Amino acid sequence: MGPGNTSAPRRTINGVFALENNQLLPFERNRYYVGKLLTSADFLAEQVYMNQKRHFLNKMMYGDGVVCGLGVYNLDDMSIMVESGVGIDGLGREIVVESAVMKKLSAIDGFESLESGKAVLCLRYQEKDVHPVYAVRSQELGEGYECNRIREGYQLFLQDAALLPPVPTPESEFLATSLLYMDGDFTVELSLPATASCGHPVRMMLTISRRSQVEALFSLDTVLQTPALLGPNGEHELHIKLEELHIPADAPVQMEYWFTAQSQLAPDSVLIAGAESTHIRVGESDRTLSENFMMKLVVEDTAPADLIARAIGSISLETRELAGTRDFIPLAAFTLQQTKNAYLIDRICEQGVKRYVHLPASADLRAAYSAWFTTPGRPSLPGSAPQPDEGGHEEGPRYQDPVYASGVCEIPLGSGARRGQLFRSDEILHGLGKGNVFVQVGFEYLDDDPKLGAMAKHTIYGDPQFFADEEPPISFADTAVKVMNDRGSFVVAVQLTRDTAQTLIALRWVAIRLPVGEEQTKLQRLGGKSIAAVQPTVVLAARESHYFNVKFKNMEPCTLTYELTERDSGEITSDGIYTAPAKEGVYEIRISCADAPLISTYAYAVVKKRDVDEP
Image: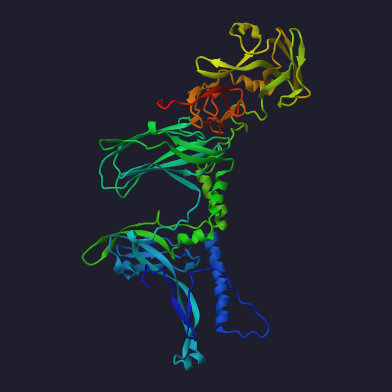
């Protein structure tokens, strides 16, 4: 069997060929019963069952690689030594080298077949029939002897590095890859985990590959909007600018970018690159995207280790089998120099070639070694969540309970309501719980807005008489609010200051929980901090989408929450991607800091039909 041959060897038992089966499933074992006639085939089935079950567990629990030892060293320019050790191949078989092996390179299998100066030393499981004994049945067949034992051993062989099969990797849903750009000459792909973990770093890879023999330089300039991720500059976008890159035909160029996932859930977020903001240049030719780029992303409140475990654990047995296996273990790579009569060993490298099996028995030793790379009080693995300071508190105010609420209150007036009449609302629960709560009410109405060119919503807080010259379509009245602190509710009273033909009065109410004690101290820290929408007013067509980005003043970028202030005003995701409704109008979006809801701002979407000639 040559070094590259992966077919199963055959051996004979009592003149019958027995195939060394690389297929471990299904498991079958002997069923014993009184009077059963046992033959050599039954005893063989017993051994096969136990071996296959053990190999299956080795394969699934540990994988393939070096368990211990098996170091490779050069004794001189033509000889090597392989240390004793243990390995597990891709079929789950244990390979034991019980003592150090010293060999000339030219005496290792596969040496004569080398075609280049780069070779890999590999270790393969091998069996050998030993201890021949006299066998009556074999004498009848004209043989006379059978081997009484099977010795498990190994085989060392060499193979050209370029011909070495790649490491089989089963496909999983862990990584998402999407095509940003493609033409006849180049492709640009973005790859990152399909699911990110709230508050944790996440890496994105940009890969540029060449598809043709064109030697032109490649340039890319785009702005990638990342609603659910914070870029290295603390904003929800990343400016990618790559100028005049030389892309080899056989070696794609990769760029690495790091983000931090927001601390809020985002089950349906996307990454966006607009066609108008993406500029590509190949040599002297300018090229563009045919349409906007969008890539799905999910942010979950799940630890990275759990996301990884889920992605690996979800790979089915069939998928693993389709990925294939290697029935050998690479130990080291050799760089050889050829002379007239032989190859001389120039260099031996194990890094990147040898894979090690992680064993539970080494967990304590692994933890002790890891301590040498870990700063006390800091996470031991790159990309872990930030830790609290020495006092056990994270910086900045964090509100566990809601501190504000808003809604609309409608008070029936009946018909023919007169000046001086007093009306009260029903008891309204503000949802902020018991305690000191401030409630303000204002007159809410729709009216034409000449600046927006459409119907717009307005709210008058205080005395509406100051806006009487504008003739707002409201019932003029004085207002008062009674807050029941121990009940978590309030009642609104209005007294008309003018006769009205309207049958009800609509009021917008806003409730704010007043901080006390430590909360009041935290609230004082918010002084001077604010956020503002980068584009506070946008004009959209029906069902068109827009991402509302914000800028921060006197504060570090933080996770934001987005909400619509009224029903049937479109849809908005948790990371700020707004989709307009089919109905024309002006719609309000409230944007606030997740950890400090009092820091907030508003944006407005003007939805209207567009003319055919309007871009």
